[in-house]
Image (cartoon, rainbow, N blue to C red):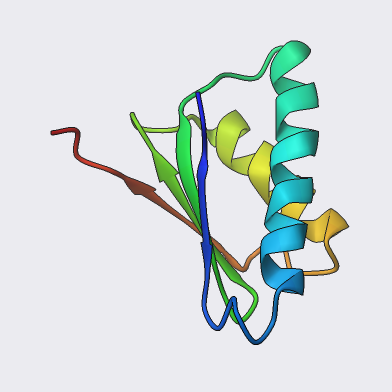
Length: 87
């Protein structure tokens, strides 16, 4: 599944989208080793990562994304999770 990537001021600060691409790469590796494909979107707003899910994420899912975000030199606590309504 393709994950939609967006970032505040993406045109002026393209590094934000680049690091979201890195998050997806690492997430896809972890998916291979037991993750899932329920992440549908990632948005970076000045270091706050919003993760859109197709279903309610487990605590393990949340921890995995937070740990990946920490690898991007951001705080693990700077992650919020939302369930996106399907159309």
